[in-house]
Length: 417
Image (cartoon, rainbow, N blue to C red):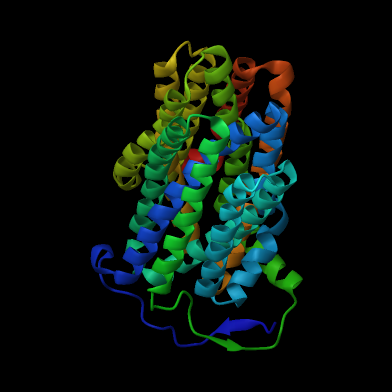
């Protein structure tokens, strides 16, 4: 495919406020539905695998396979998103995810669902997630006015937090309604499949372009495109530090959800509905975090927000390890969710303001290669360690790791950022 470049004349940016911006409202409404559906099936996935295999390691491996495409495909995906039509990429990804998720309950009710199929679905869905996420984030500065980018991203974070709140509870209700884990998880997969169909329809109604006008120039290899994005990221000292720090955080936190599920199920003996509420507390915290994040961004520097978030995550992990009932779990999961929007809006807003439109896909993908690519490694490793360590002991090690990262980060330039 030919290399593309921006025209000298930049098209006018949107000027309408977010609440009068039809394109943004359509994009956002589709995200609300699809994110909620994703959280429903994401909650059900480990329960489905545990019912299938009774193996925590398999549950960790399957979750890792779903995130493995971030490690494998983030760099080429970013380069391709900068070449291709971002809207068509997003439509294709949502269509694929709609069909993939629907295949699971269909196979189950036909009596042909197997563990290998779940692995294939998880991997292909993860691949579509990589392309869609990079395209959506890179398109955001074209859909809203520059001054509204932080607010638009904050609404996306609030949407994700709302989905994290509603999705697990809805998933727990569906499983309770079905009366058994396996048929209940099939209902969650069908709900997720339909949510992607809604997203396809909402994207189809958007008329604004998702990238600047481009012209064909001298073609450049995909490898050269990828290296260009990596070089940009690595030559920005603060952005590079943010990428490395977020990578370490994501690695340590990758094992929390599965450890909490096993702690709640096997040690504290909570029912599925209560477990859904525990996981949903992350979303409640995220909603509160989304409400206070703009105020924090205005009154505090990047450094205090990022270092404060790290300290809070360390304390939350300690609380999880010491939990003796659902309320301690709910409080700790809520604190984890509260801090993510505060941390993320600082990092993402800085990144989107720094990179030019023609490099956004590659810079975002380079960042996500590190920060998202480490998650499958973390999920697989923490899933394996659950057997010898147990859930409570694993949470202790996660807390120790986050505490060490907090200490190291306090000696970096973030103190003055």
